[in-house]
Image (cartoon, rainbow, N blue to C red):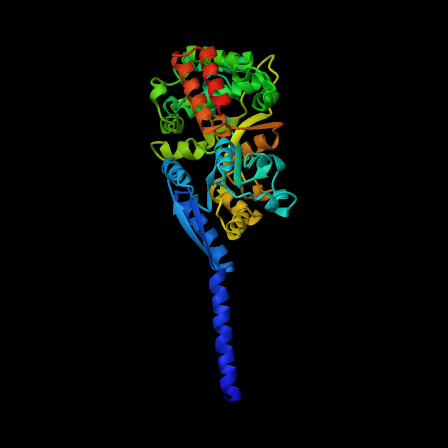
Length: 421
């Protein structure tokens, strides 16, 4: 064999070996997200394309699903024990349930003490943790606040939103007297009403009440007199008829439409409210500069502070069989540059430190300011608790509003579901 032939054979052999190694390194990441809006979908696709361009051995297969369709399909694949590598997660009780079932990948080593972990406030990781281990990461974390129509409040003499519950009730009565629907509420979807009761309880008992209840230190749990009192205060509010006619059968989109069309003065909702109001308004423009937001009022004699926040956001959990590339892609999605872009495109409340420079929407900036000042942060109860207990909370609050259960009966139902876990 000539020297040239030997060299050619060597090169071919090396190429075959290298090719085999390259093929072995090829990996696929299955990513499910709910960014169905055109701008969200395009942005997330670009994130994936840019990552693949920098990591050609990785293929990212994307499944885009509408919120409810996502929940339904995810439930099916989880029951089959085959979760996606990366998928939308709101953290809390649902994530804990999946972790307990061994369906998630422990990524604690990629978070604790790392630059990635330190890029976000320590509190946000609690939402995506269970028993001290981390199973996902957030990119958006905001709070539930009162969104209000400044023009309608001005008609009854209010230039700013009430900071106390007593003054809030006075505002409700003045709006009613003026023929204005005070509060839009999608009671048929249940979860919008849940936030009202949760906040009253937080303002009465403070964050300590919630922590003691979840830890078992509060022996009566949700049958504690403070939770029952919160239910009674909600019933008392409902007796003023502050909601639109037919609110018990209304959807959240109905609620948003009332706000977006200027037919109701306020709603208690998350950071996504302005966009949903806009999308559901008749002219697709919403309230614009007429819209503002404020913290849930303080309650006289309550232990809770106005700086204590109920909220949450969006993130991704990591499936049990996910390759390391899925974790690396998650970290890429949550780097400062991409989190800033996300804030610019979708007005999310970014979790990465410094990414707030991407916020241009004044409404998002207001929510960010409220969350930044929070002294206690509680994930929405229907997400924080187990799915069964969370669903019972939603049902119980609706029953209080409908008058089909007393506050004590409603709290007993929640406690039963809570201890059953």
